[in-house]
Image (cartoon, rainbow, N blue to C red; front, side, top):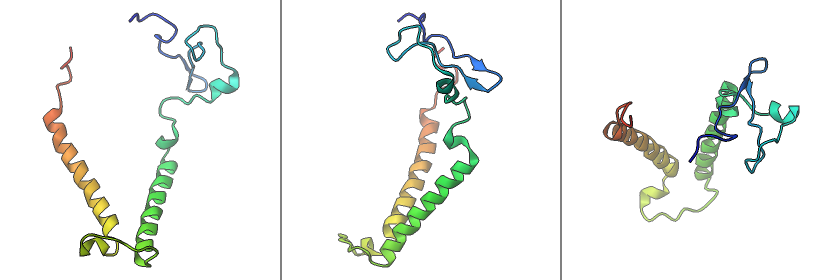
Length: 125
């Protein structure tokens, strides 16, 4: 595949606004499509995404905490009937605890697996 074409160049960065300029092509790759000022103003620069702002990260964490508390609260006040195969599956908060422990174990195993599967920096050179 040829490296020439409308999308082969890196987008230019507007120093005044800190935004990158979108390539001048339409959705089908045809040249000549220009963005209006409003459209180009909506393209965020790298590092300005919604998930990268500390205040939004705190909102996500608090939302997850609220969902976890609601889950255990529904379990605590018997808002539904459990149908566990074993007795421990009907304990209050078992599902939340099991999910948390499984997630932590998954991260720990992935960190060890990374040591096995990681390649040198210049592996493909």
